[in-house]
Length: 321
Length: 163
Image (cartoon, rainbow over all chains, first blue to last red):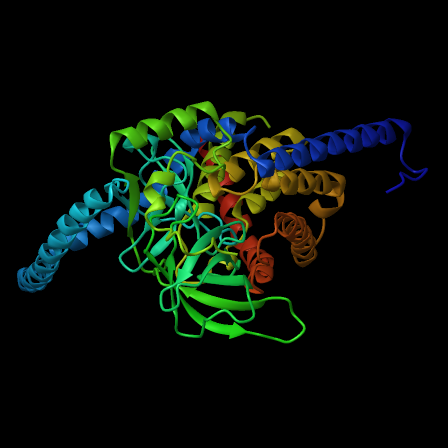
């Protein structure tokens, strides 16, 4: 790197000034990355600049959208009819099931009134569509086509027809990014459906896989068990299917048993996802105010929601690990 | 640089195309194999037309890429700043290399860029990318001559038309 004698003085000076500029930009990059990694400060810049690049995203998506609409237009009549019939059958079956559920819900409400327990909160859903692009292949995030304008907020759970997918992580004006359960930064309170063992499922960093690291050695869990969200922490509704346990490892010498589980949601195939938006206006308003309070530090849990989860915590059991 | 205007249009068009190719969806699990189009275009314009010689340009372009691809703000910027710096440092030599040697130099530049990215990804705590990810520079180098010929042809044609 040392400029040798064959360089004239001017070139050497030019070179050292280039080195200085290189150092300046490298430091600038490092500072930016640190700020971005720690969250909060650079978020504003990112939000506004997303508006700038949104045309690019739309442009890239255009061919896919076009081909989809063309395909839908040219699908022939008979296959459409068949599809309609299948959907009709499906709808009827679901409706029948819903009738039973309605009855159960009424009964539940009555019992709740008798017990003077807290009122349950109705959950609303917002259907979102995946953007056609896979932004960053080594981070576990998805981009969806609804944003703050459509009422999405940071922290809302996202699911598909098979189970929980993740939660809303960043909200832009017309889009939002969803952090998947498999992200190493994500932790989810879960319980085993069969034995009601409570634990926390961490993202493993591998696509669609969760790890359970802090199970007691004698915890009643075995391969094939279904993990449900436990509702502790107040962010996710209790009882949503999350994952199937693949393997349990109880190696001697370790303080805790560990298990791996495969996420139920099929993130690869799905195009449509549901965002669970809290239905009641009071909760939304409360969330709004709490979001305004901590404008950017959205990572903290909303605390005002304990009412919705208190029902799921039987008094006899202790809290999870 | 007598005909600055048409060359600039071509530069903007090629850069926009490279940016679009960066985020266009890739079929199946082949996504890590995506060549670093923006770097290739930057290298071309630096070597052949003397554009993108300032580190600041690389920095801004990198920031744009970061916002587009959702990486950490500054990740692509760091890679491109270092790439532009190295390119500028060895520009006089690389320009007059025979083609295969030029391709080798570009391969080294792109691999160096991958190492920088890998470093940041590891610091972030994300899972390591698959081995396909390391083949992307090779694929990019195979594409390099065609990109070179295409852009050169377009540039020559434009010059003929504009004169």
